[in-house]
Image 1 (tube, helix red, strand yellow):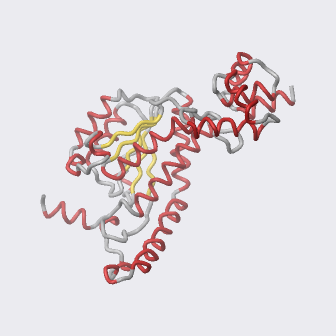
Image 2 (tube, helix red, strand yellow):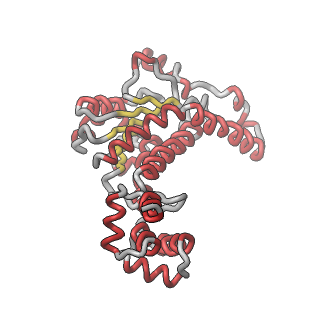
Amino acid sequence: MTNSYSRKMAGLLTEQRNLNTLEIDRKSVREILELIHQEDRSAVNAVGQALPEVEQAVNLVEQAFRKGGRLIYVGAGTSGRLGVLDAAECPPTFGSPLEMVQGIIAGGYTALHRAIEGAEDHAEDGAVAIREKQVGPRDVVMGIASSSVTPFVLGALQEARQKGAPTIFLSCTPIPQENRPADVVIELLVGPEVVTGSTRMKAGTATKLVLNMITTTSMIRIGKVYQNLMVDLTATCNKLRDRAHRILTMLTDLDYDQAGDLLNEANMHVKTAIVMHLCKKNRAEAERLLEEADGMVHRVLEKAQNP
């Protein structure tokens, strides 16, 4: 490690000392909690300031999904774990294919549950991970690096751009215009952390909020939600099977048991069941109508009401 590296790191917003918490070690439990809570508000505010860039990111992701492409997160440490977490949560919530949203973390699977901090230091490893995913122009690669300087993430983004993939970069420190490593740059300027440099706190909170926004909005836009209901959920456990039943009882005149019978007829596909019942169609016809409407339930129902 060199003095120039140290100076570079010391100048980052994420490495600054928080003047509001200089004496946090002398505070009571309640006072510490109140300080953390107050600082967390800046995470939400930072997300609000970045909404124009988040919108640009969603547009890229929606376009990729419509072309059969993928969203691939790349990060290290907390950032990497948050990307993997968001990817893992999409299939049960939205019924999306496992490969549609993916997460790459420096250090691989082990790094999900144990810190492997040195894994982030090699740009070539990030590039290799992108090549292994066979990234192409239909995909979107989103790098996540609170500090903005993580070599693994920057190497992955550079490789993705060379492969023709649109790129997004999320950071919690300002990025000079001439050094922007992606097509869309999201800056979440949450300010110095409660504990200096601990970006698992405000930076991590803001990052999670934005990842939720990007995938949820993109999934809504491609028809994975009707009204505010997750009608493409994958009923893989008792909770989700129950939710599928209850969605049908909310949208139709069916009781719980009747909803279950309809779900069985629809091969446990909630969207198909909705169209079957409300449009008086069999399963094959309902599936055809949904395909013609790009999976959008409201389009099918509107067309049925106004033929």
